Every structure is written in C-alpha cells, then in structure tokens.
Figure 1 (cartoon, rainbow, N blue to C red):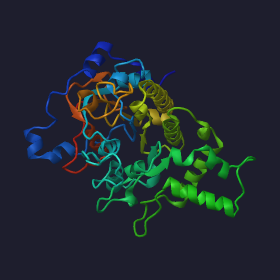
Figure 2 (cartoon, rainbow, N blue to C red):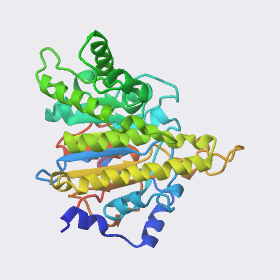
Figure 3 (spheres, one colour):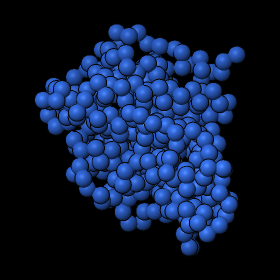
Figure 4 (spheres, one colour):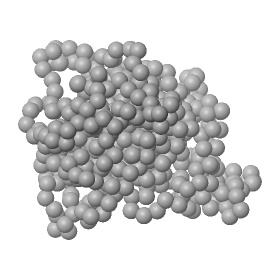
Length: 399
C-alpha cells in the first residue's frame, strides 16, 4: 500500500509542458509591481498557518548546472519525477557568476556580490539565522551538509548584527570528516579506539571540524544541549564505522554530503536541512565528466527523495526545494568544457523544483522568479519573514 506522498510522486505532467516551461525565455522583468514597490514587506509576510509542512530540505545542486543537462535531458530522471509531482519554475533568474556569491544569495535571499575566492561571511542574515531567531528552533533542528571547502562553511551563518553563530546551522562537511584518514584515526583497525589521550585529541578535532553550535551564555536554547551534542557525536562515529569514508570516484564529496543529509533526516528528523553540492564544476575541463557527476548527484537525490516519501513521519510533513546556483556558458570552451562567464540565458537562468505536502502537483510556472525567492519562501513556511531587501515568496506554489 502506498501513502499519499508516494502516489503524488508518481503523477506526471506531459513532457511537452515540461519542455515548454524549461525552454521559456528570460525576457520579462523580475517579479514586482506597484504593490511591491509601495509595500514590499507584504511580499515577505508569513504564509497562512496550519500547513502540513513542518520540515524543509533545500538542495543546492551546485557547481554550475545548465537546465539543458538536467530537466531537458535524460540525465536526471529523479529530478524530473520530483518536478512532475511538484511545482517547476523553469525561469529562475540568477546573478553573480561566481559559485560562492551565487550560492550565498540562495541562503541569504539577497543577491550577493562576492568574488569567486572571497571568504567573508554574508552581511545579510541567512535563512538558518532568520528561522532560528524568529521561531526559537534549537541548533539540533537546523543542519547544513556541505561537500567540503572553506567557503562553504560560511553558508551556516552571517556576520549580521544580532545574528551570527548563535543562530547558525549545525555544519557538517563531508570532505573534512568522512575520509579514510580520519576514519583510521578514530576507528582504527580493530574497531573504535579506547578513550585515551590520543582519541580525545582526535575527537576534539572532529568536534571543531563539525563546527557544532554550543549554548551561548545568557541565551538559553540557542545551541545544542549536551544530550543533542552527544547524539551528534555518536552519529558521526557510526558514520565513520559505516560506508561514508569508502565513497570514492568522480563526485564523491557530493555523494557523501547527500548520504549525510539522508541519514540525518532519518535519525534526527530536523526541521531544516540544507545540502550544497559542487562537483559539476569539473565542467571547466570535461563536459563528459560534468554529465557523469550530474547523473551521480541525481541518483543521490533520488535516494534522498525515496527516504523522505518512504518514512511515514517525513512523507506528510517535509517539503523539498532543488536548484543550482547558476547554469553554464552556452558554448564549449577550447577544452570542450563549459565555463561560466558569457552572460547567456543558459548561465543566468536555471530551474527550481519545489515538492511538498502543501504544494501543487504537476505545475509548470512560466513566469520569471529569482533564486533569491527560495529563502523567503522557506522562511515563510516556518511562520517567519525576511527583510525588505530580500526576495519574495514563490508564486503559484500552494495547492
């Protein structure tokens, strides 16, 4: 017997409608109008209460991915079935051709101008901070799983006054934790090492790498309490005993980040889970490798979706959003790869997919939206709202 979410996941829209939506040109102006200009806060107001949605998963299918190689191809059957069962926004406008600035924009809901190698945190609060500060969610309810890299640690919280680390997401980076060398240090050849000085030092390094927010003096409940911290540490040790460290090959770090997210959803059932992927950036040097990574990431996305729809608690309470930070150039470079800098539609327009218990099914929304509209939409699902200089909530989403 299938549950309602599984039945909804099998519904589909005609392929011609999907193709028509995916091929729509970005010719219209960004969303807005007289009402928005007069009272922009109205567009960021919390959506109606009493929704079924209690949890949200956000997957930034990053690394620079064109719609031509996803929904307009045979490379991403899982992304397509999620889109068929939810709402597709094929005309999602992006800005900034650098991975960091474009990805930060998704989390902050504001177009950021960071360069490709900058390390500064955003000055606009992230959706993690907004949600935790406005709703009182604990750190153990909010997670960010990254594919690794120093820049990606900055997605967890901003440098905005009144926000910051105290309201950030639990951060776990697959590259820094689930690798063979670290597993050898912690687990050893014959099982988990004893609690000696060496093991304590190693676990201390692990705790620092995970960057788990701890309670802040005078701000009860902002960080993980001791029980939550112990559960998180135990989870990491179990993962180190398992298969995460043995994942190898092209796109391995993305696969680890997705595995972590899938397991965290099953074990902790957090209210908000975000995942950032980056391996498709191999496109600079090889189009074939780029496509291979996209296919592998789509397989992992399918496993995550199946885990959500197959869990009785998650299936009726979880919404899923998927989008890249930007696309790719229209034409090949001299290496027969794809860069990101030609200002073409294929670079600056991506597809956003939204699926959930409160959302419409089989809908292609042809109007232009923006990547910065995703964060305000997610915040509104928790009853909060972002600032006036951020994006708006996605239109046509709710059933």
